[in-house]
Length: 91
Image 1 (cartoon, one colour):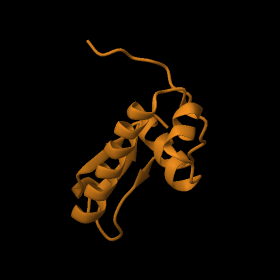
Image 2 (image 1 turned 30 degrees about the vertical axis):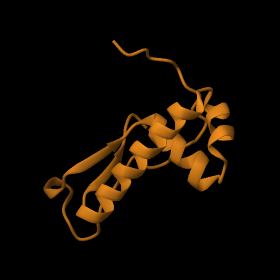
Image 3 (image 1 turned 120 degrees about the vertical axis):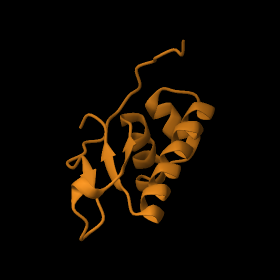
Image 4 (image 1 turned 60 degrees about the vertical axis):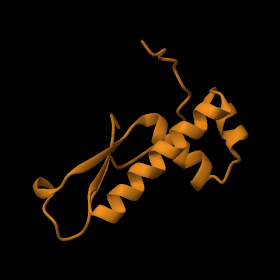
């Protein structure tokens, strides 16, 4: 069973869903981003931090941060390329 370690999430997110224009929400498939994934995107891409610094802020190892960031980027790319909605979990 994987360990569940509490991670530091500092971002305040005002929206929990994004979708392509002109397509009703009930017709869409969604990619779900976890809190960890959206925080990793915020730190690395929005704030422009290096992975080591971002991992320290989330209080996780750099390899773990890298895995979370890659997962988030893959989900975002999948949603953009295939016209899916993005949902942020539990915000």
